[in-house]
Length: 326
Image 1 (cartoon, rainbow, N blue to C red):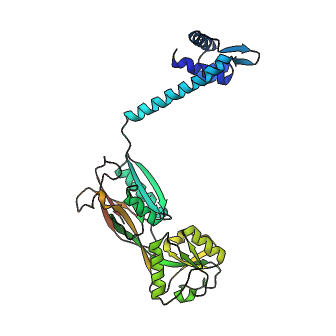
Image 2 (image 1 turned 30 degrees about the vertical axis):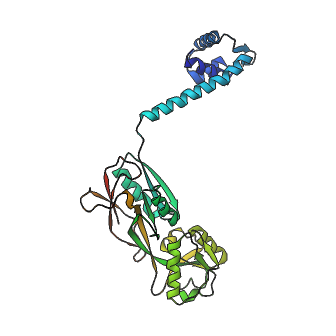
Image 3 (image 1 turned 135 degrees about the horizontal axis):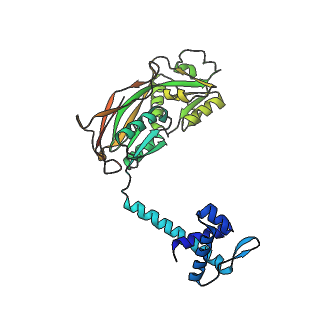
């Protein structure tokens, strides 16, 4: 008995016809298939199917044999796949994380750079809150992440790649929408959407700014992420202070306005664990540029950064790669 006998038998049983199984499934002649089935029945020592008015019908022995034949073929397929995987080297991977919403700016160029420098790796992408990204870096679940400079950040190295202002987000028909710039004193008495502890860096910067401005505002609601903040602004007709990149995601019913005076800013950093090796100084390898899309003047300040990462990172087979992020 050979594997082809099992495959032929299963095909005939599932199609209910020798002719259909031969032509559509097995691409062989019907007489040849009939001989293979007779040979199988001879090996088993029992009749497995009979030809009836409605096509092929399985006998009691055939029905029992069908279950075991399917199982045997599935096990053979699984064994073949396992053997092939064992014979091939494990494909290296590079785990890249993004602060939710920042993928729009940085993901396309980061992927291009990695594909050019390390074409034979598997790239995995995750989008999370900044504290979760920092935790994943510490635990070794991510190689590199674009996040906020979280503190404390044990064993992490941060390099600033962009600095953006905090802006006011409000409904397009709000009473303050006609102003070119908004003072923090203007939003006193408005429904205020604050930032929750899922964004501790942003929350701290906004709280410090309001305190320096002499403004005492207690948030009416707290948002865990940008989508929630925008939804709350739209539904409560309130205002929120958010990083400028939120402007890329605003629906038509919302607008943003700059703050007047001493505008607070927030940094975006590239982070990685120093337990994977510190940045190398000079001459490690030619650098590649990773640029965020162009911005309007004053909207986003990018700091030229050459981040030289000695790898291995999540795998142990890379050479040394140098990334230049601008």
